[in-house]
Length: 177
View (cartoon, rainbow, N blue to C red):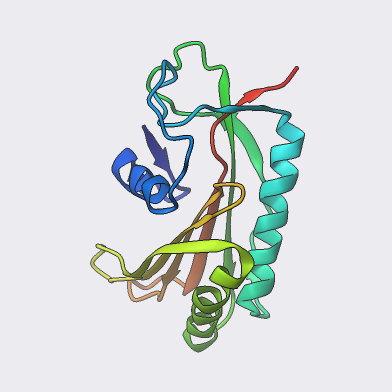
């Protein structure tokens, strides 16, 4: 299973599996869906609201007065290897914070790293990514919902404007009719 963030970076099942094992998920199993847990039966609107609320809280924690991209959470097929019928869904919410200097973005990442555990998140990675620019990255899992967070501070060393890229992913679920 792979997930692709909005810039085309792929997070493999190894990373996602590590996140699941790190939080001690009691529902870990391998079934016909190809997932390592039993997807819950849920209404998409409920999951969109849940991920959107967590995303709004992440924005508050950053405490940066900058610009954000406008796209909201969206429902799509879950990329489960055993799901040929495409019955499983997940919600993604990618967005970016930009229009401020690196000093403010650095402070925002520090705020995020320090406050996530008090907000019910387990930080599973905090450090530089493997890119040439060695961008600072935070990966976390919300302990109650199992929503995953990827936050990357791109300093703009490659000539682009500096920004923080945020993506939240829900767990895969089966649409409730």
